[in-house]
Length: 368
Image 1 (tube, one colour):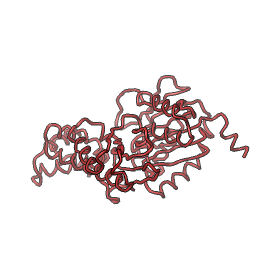
Image 2 (tube, helix red, strand yellow; image 1 turned 135 degrees about the horizontal axis):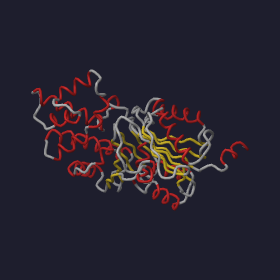
Image 3 (cartoon, helix red, strand yellow; image 1 turned 180 degrees about the vertical axis):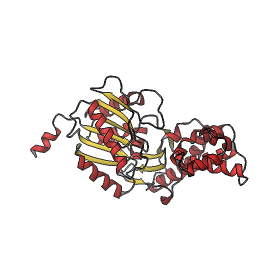
Image 4 (tube, helix red, strand yellow; image 1 turned 60 degrees about the vertical axis):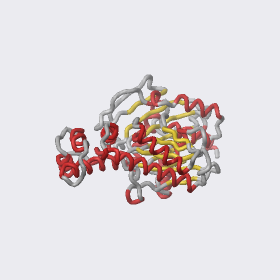
């Protein structure tokens, strides 16, 4: 009993972590919503189901510990809210919890899928639906009663399609078929190889087949597809329509499963695929979801998802509303990461907080 009290005394109230497919954000907060420190750390291991990904989380915790001026080892906060892309199945939750407890960073570890952070960050309510479309795709929902629903979202084997990798794969697929005569003409047959400094889609295919270009780089192609679609390319528009329809299917299923078709339910869209400005793509999503729930309110997330992890943690701590408003106000993208380019082959870490005036950047290997 005395050890538990000693654990809590003098520590920040909350460690909030959001881990997506390519980055990890971590923040330390007090119960009044004051942000002590926040960091963003790249994570090159895109597979959230293995321990290399979790080591990326460990790197972010080490960085926020340093930024807050805490000792190099020992606990960092009373409560830890970890919203992670790899927490897809109940077995994942148990595995991650075992891993977290072995590090003893907090007195109470809570694990959620990262979609729950997106939902909490994107609406003032504690209920609604979130769809994340980054490297892959996922969706979760919370009913006003607190009942939850989520998809396994582990790829094609769980019935998923969408996100940067699938859009990029489709772009290369269509570009190859256009060039060899199996498909209709598309600007992608020029734009896709040009993105990789090549002239023909077959060159890209061969480079990936022989390992000269990692297949993971297909995730870079969605902006190319959006540009082509905006310019009127029918094939590119077909790819984006399929992505929009998958968003409607996932969010619509969550709304129905949770009995929210008659409510003014918020659907929060988070992730890199939703950062573009293509009106037909978003209009298709809006119209499709309105057929499921006529009062639906579709929102595009502008805050960093770690805000949602922080708010979920403050909910757990029963913090007052002003504390949550304070955390939301401070934890902005500008606070966590100052503007600047990011090389694809390296990881940049941005630190903001005590012990790190301004920000410090240094390359590191994700998961190291």
